[in-house]
Image 1: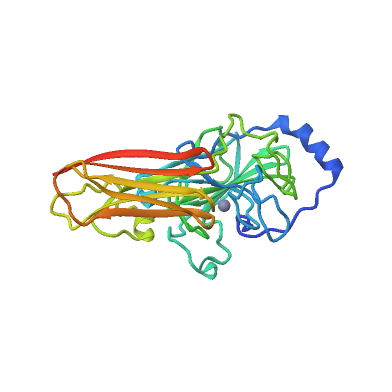
Image 2: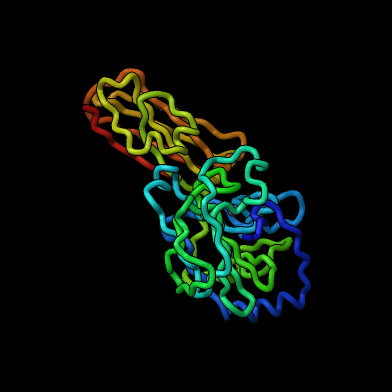
Length: 319
Ligand SMILES: [Zn+2]
């Protein structure tokens, strides 16, 4: 059995003395990214109240989250096969496979199998790492098998209690969940200055574009998540030319700008808006109902204060 603590877990009360012990222990283990091709969408929750915070005092977490979620942009990327790797040398303790990949709306559907397909690796000296939500029938290791740092163990999936394709990576020491980004057990603290357990630093990127693309009709968020409009090429016979973007970590007060210029150099979209609420995932699209052949230019910008957090410009040739 894998530990089914992915969605909720008992709070950990930390003693000051334990903190000293763990600072000393930090040097005896280091982890590599379990998914170098992924981006980090959610961190462990370091707030023991009903609120949540990530290790940098940001909002890339949710209440009770115990792992670091390494995500891919959409199900099309997941279907292409994204490798999950052992984060440190060790011995595989247990695995699960055969759970279908699907977006779960009701957690009762996966009761007892919240982790989905996954595995636990014993790294010795009380350290363990767990990998959840792997793709159905992708786990390539067996209990008892020795793995090295970087050994492929499966593929990124969406099994168990997962609402997007990712690998939930969780670290434990002597049975207690540790935040590898902060290096100490989950507790009531966050700080911008923490010792991480990563062998190579993993950049903290609070806001970023996940992906963008085009569609011939108004896209739904579900279609975009499923990868339906991944790399769609607009044709002159299409009923509309829609440009869509999906970003994470978007906050109230952020300013969004989208523009579209047609092949005749006419600006057909000039959209500006200041957001009134935080959006963990921010999906927006704009477009033209008149599609003509030639080169179109689209832009998407997200500004916060005087920082330009996202700034993309794309041209497409419509035939
Ligand atoms: Zn997770």
